[in-house]
Every structure is written in C-alpha cells, then in structure tokens.
Image 1 (cartoon, rainbow, N blue to C red):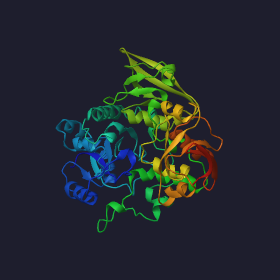
Image 2 (cartoon, rainbow, N blue to C red; image 1 turned 45 degrees about the horizontal axis):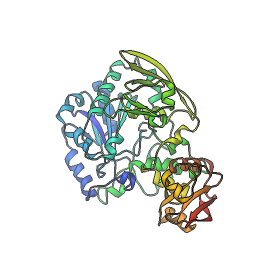
Image 3 (spheres, helix red, strand yellow; image 1 turned 180 degrees about the horizontal axis):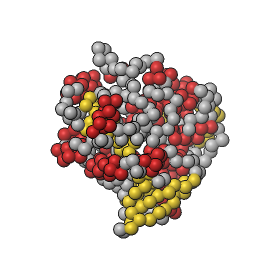
Image 4 (cartoon, helix red, strand yellow; image 1 turned 60 degrees about the vertical axis):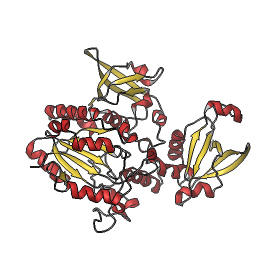
Length: 440
C-alpha cells in the first residue's frame, strides 16, 4: 500500500511575481516528475479520490501538498519534504497522494493561497479540513530547505485528527466557501483554452492551469459580470502583520513582535505569546491564521486564545475598517492582472519622504511614481492613454491623499467598474498633466 501525502504539482507561477525564476527546461521538469513519481513506492500519484478513499479505509489523515515543479520558489522545502529522513516517521502517519495539475481541482475543497508555489491542506477522509500550511519565507528564498514549521504543522494536524470528530464544530470555519464554478477550467476565462486533463502528447506545461490563475479567474469573474471585486480577493489570505503582529517563521503561530499602537497591541498580544486558536479555530500554522483573516469581516472583532507563561489568556482583536488595505500585495503573482484592471498595466511605487521634499511634494499627498508601463494587450491600455514611465500620479478620481499602490488597487477595484475612464493628474517634468485612467 502506498503511504502518506498528496502533492499537487502546479505549473509555473507568473514569472514576475517575487522576481520568481523558473527551471530552464520547464517541459522537461514536468515530464521528469511524471517519470520519477508515477510509480513511486511512497507517493500515490495523480489520484485525489483514491487518496480520500485510502484515508477512510486506514483511518489516517490525508496531507495534500500543492507544488509548482517548474518554479524555483519553494524548491528547497519541496526537496526536503520528498527526501528528508527525519520527516518519514511523520509522513507515515498520513495517506500519500502526489498530483500534478490543478485543471480539475475541486475548488470547494481546495481553497488556499493561490499565489504560493508550495502549499498544503490536511484533511480527514470524510473531507473535513484540519488545517492549511504555506510559507512565504520559502517562497521568497528557493534555497531555504528548513522544515521546522512544516513538521510542527504536521504534528499539530495529527493532534487535531486525534480529537476528531469531537472537535468537528470547532473546524467548521476552516471549511471552504461556496464557489461559482466547481473546477478552474469551468471559469469562462479558462474554459476556452484549458481542458480538465494535461496534454501529455503535446506541450504539457502550456496545457496546465497555473496555480495563481485560479485567483485571477475569480477576480475576472466579478469584473466580467460588472461587479466590484470583493476585498478578500484583492487581498487574499492576508498576513497578521496587517494588524501589527509578526509571527515566528519556524513555529505554528508564536508572536515574535507587536507593533506599538496597532490592533494587535490594543488586543494585548505580547511577544512570546502562542496563538492557540483564532476566531475559535484551532491553528496548525501561520497559513491557518491567514485563512481566518481571509474570511474575517471588514470590521469587527476576532477572538483569540493564547498560551502565555504556562497559562492561557482569552483576547479580542478589533479589526478597524479598511484593515485589509494595509496588506502589501505588490509582489504577489495575482497582483499583475489587477494592475491591468485598475491601472491599465502600470506598476507604481510610493515616493519616500526624503525624496518628496526635493520634488516639492507634501508628505501627506498622493505621490506614486510609475515604475513600469505595460506594452501588450490589457497591460498596454495605460500607455495608449498617454501614461509614461516616471510620471508621478498625484490625483486619481476623488483620491488625493497619500496611499500605497496596494491600497489604491483595492480602492479602484471596489469603487469603479470596467469601461470607466478615471480622471487623473500626473506630474511630468514638474508640470501637471490631466489624463484618463482606463478601468478594465
């Protein structure tokens, strides 16, 4: 019998995200994956349904890892998961499946951070989700092979499994939300180009739905139906750093620092606290924290249970209105299509204080320097509207105050619809110039 883990090999993440590099031979990497893993003794390969059935039969939990093989991001931890001897005793306690594409992914089950090239979801055989794992630390550093946080997530998931089904009600918030389409290839944006199966007789990489394209398809779904994009899809799976809390990257959810005058500080969180649950959901990793925030309200309160000095403390974190807009989404793969929607294909950077003085700009006013203007397709609309690299955006519709690129993306996508031409003002060579910013 094959043993524990489900790995989804997802294709290449958008090359511009995080400056991500890819292997030189992407096609070869995917085909080598198939040749190497298809009959592997440890991993079931390309059989999710079989994995769930085996989990039911054996009574073991099912660990599903989603991995983009051609992408170099997270290559280190992926290699460790496949090869590290110390992980074997843990992996033996899970059912193992390794799947290589997301085209037919059941989106009602698989809801996670689509911008990562290595993620994990742990299930009960009946489909109940125990928790999620994902690491931006590894995403940013392909050479990082440490599995400390991954091991702790597996151990925590086993503890949750040991308490199941008595804890099932506490896990209700971890389950997926309703979806407009069951699989990625049913989204109109993807249906015309992709099939449910990979084209092994042709160009296999080009036939695969990229992981980040799932998030892109959701946003395109809202725009194509003339709806505003919900905040949770503009700022998906937000970090708790938006609330002023930094968590240690080698642990489940241990507080490393708390920013002064932040929502985290107001709640009473302290360095050294360990978050045991958030919004009554048991946590197995930092990704679980982000999932809670992904589903959190636009304002309100989140209950938190922390371990502190051998005791437990119940806290409440107040979410201020607009808290999601403090997320930094600038380096996410999914942000590039949003730049086309909101900016006609531009990338912008807030001008720092020390440079503003030399330009005669106030510290409180909008001043976003255009760092990149797209040249093709939907990403060329700003160029066609007259915007140029190094222009400084100082007004956009009713916005004049200082704002980050991440925040203005959210403002425009939630307040303007495709087809609008937003009045804007830029500085070019010290002169004000009125332009119309196309919304797509």
